[in-house]
Amino acid sequence: MPSDFTPPSEELQRLADEISLLRRDFQTGIATLGRMEKRLKAAFPAYETKKKSRPQSSEEPRSASGKTPDQLNADFDSLLVATKERGDVGFESAISAFPDEDVIALAHELGIGSLKTTSVRKAREGVRKRVQESLLLSYERKPNT
Image (cartoon, rainbow, N blue to C red):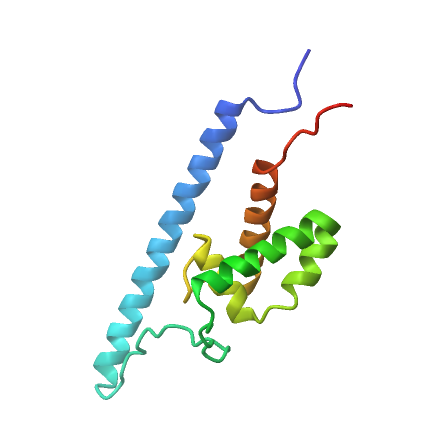
């Protein structure tokens, strides 16, 4: 019975060949650009190459949280209580009450990311996971009566 699908080994070989062809095409293109730039510099000595610059962030610099680690731990405890009582809705309503810089500082305090590079979205998701983890670890089985 003939198979409509190629075996994995053939598929891997085909993909490896495509990758090597693309790599060769990129190298050829880069070499061509280099030659064109050299000719441009020879024809126009005053021509300056563009400096590679880092993309500028459109955001304004974020302010640091003014809360102490103890205050951040108290905030985490309030998130735990809200999540335990009302689930995800409780977590969302509680965390939306915090300023973004406090959420990022709380995430950092919990060992999630850094203060400078962590986005608010990643900080919220990290705090959510820590809350869920803490609730799972603190779960106590109630004895049957």
